[in-house]
Image (cartoon, rainbow, N blue to C red; front, side, top):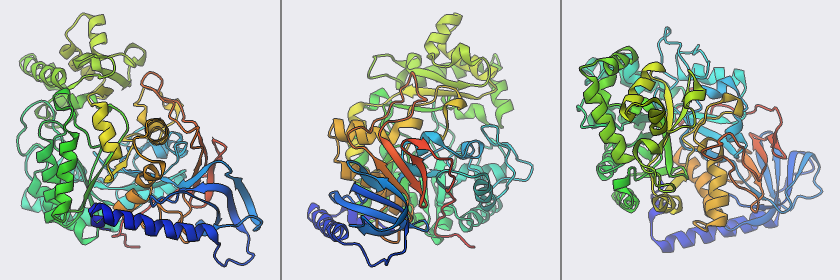
Length: 570
């Protein structure tokens, strides 16, 4: 699964592309011997962008029993279903390298916000992964009660429920800690606890996990070294994953002034743990750090030069999203939600918390488009209680309406909502985003949830628009990267990173995850003010050989399944 050859000299890359083009040319000139057996689906007359980065070529695509069986001149071959792709691009299905659809796809298997973008596989599991969990831990999300304890049981539930696209999952180091040590514990595990976490992780790998993941960033202040897993703890866990050929995925410990240290830590975990490394939503975060994306990318390249299989993914926006509770220093969270809420209400602790929240948010957040900063660059995206009073407004705006300080509003809102408040915050530079999008080692993610408009709230528009935004805005309109390269970074590159070597390329024998889109019309329509809007230009989507989207509409089919890492034991 190593991608080291992707970082070799320009000359080698040119030779590689030439070879891929030659193979593509041969595929486009003649169909393999396939007799007269009808295809289940025949896609005709399209410009095939096959996922390798090679130039497009004209060809038809024949699909049978879930797989691609022919790529070539196939007109006239019998088929049960024909999709006319004249004037359109035919590409592999897109792979969302970092998603949060763990529970939403059990509430609504259509996953409209993703499948209508052309996303045919999502990778989930950051934060509190779906497994392992204790039998009495039934708390899920989006109204879903967890009735499983292992990742294998989760995948079984997913396929029973029915899902449009494919799902792959990590096991979170945070969830392992929660299972073994308890919620909110901020200390190092004992030797016995670490061994139990390693046992559970091995079980997850044998159930089909992609690997180990951890969200490491701790906002607000200097944190105790035991607040989240340390480097050595993660190396020990990564070694378990390495035995199964898995991946270490990470939300870096710092995405701002210490991003270079954070990239080096991720590389060290990969190097000593014997695993490949995927950095989620790479960014130069916070106004003081604008312009440092080049340094972060150089650090990734340097790690690869010494033999570490490391790469990254990004979403194409200058704003991020997470829970408002993340803005509160980690020490306030110790012991779980009840103690978190009590500390914020404690008159002795509250002044310190307010000061640290203010320092953090006023320094970091800035909307490059509007000039708003601090609390006015943070929008409330979702709450459970009184959404009409909060959703769509900035923290600063709500504070002014109530006549309180913004920091007081942060704490009051969290207390009122039981700690559950979603926010969108602006803290990236457009030039940094463009640099990352264009880099050959960077793939794409939504960092979002498979949802539909009836889910409500005002989520980040990346839930609905990430992939069409790259194809339409950044590739076609802005020329940041060629179409074939954009597709490669959505298909074969992420498939290779995750070990999905039978997906991501339009070739005979591969699973038929296919997107047919209009290169002149494809564009995102979701905005920060109106995020529940589907993109234009994604005409047809197939998953495992079944048409899930036809002429831009969901067909009601649910052919998705769990896709598994190399350690799966059946």
